[in-house]
Image 1 (cartoon, rainbow, N blue to C red):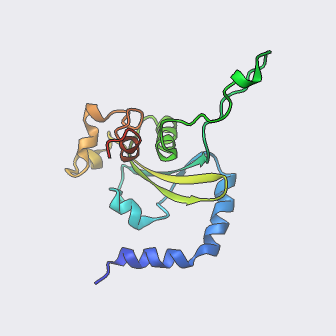
Image 2: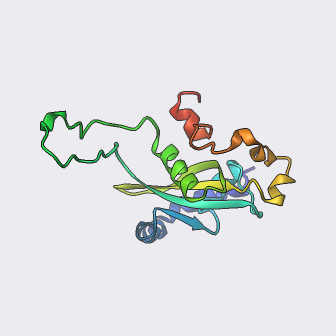
Amino acid sequence: MKSGYSFVQESRKKAEELMKKRLVEWRKQHTVERIEKPSKIERARALGYKAKPGFVVVRVKVRKGGRRRARYHRGRKPSKAGMVHFTPKQSLQAIAEQKAARKFPNLEVLNSYLAAEDGTTKFYEVIMVDPKNPHIVNDPEINWICEPQHRRRAFRGLTAAGKRARGLK
């Protein structure tokens, strides 16, 4: 017997026209945007999201492709500029988690997932947790994130995407 979330997942596959309209709106928004609830509820719940105080969902916009380096402004030999073929050592998902962590320094990144993508942009939804919130501190399933060794975990490669980038998963 199928779960309720599997039916939600199937219905999403049929709603492509709605997704196109959403992408037009999302492109106009800021790079890091706090949202009320996750767009993929079944994926968010599988990654640890709960609809209770202390949990925050953030949509992050990341440009596809390799790293863009700043151009120099004085005379140099163009072949030594090193403008192309530079890639960051992290996935775009890990970069999105770090962008969210910079925007909300009082929250910790729990996990993230790909919400949508178009030709030039990927949109990730990052699940964040407030370690000072009493609902989080008193929840035995998630209160591990309140401990000091989990501080700034997105920057130290301790999230799932960060571990994959480091070759640990």
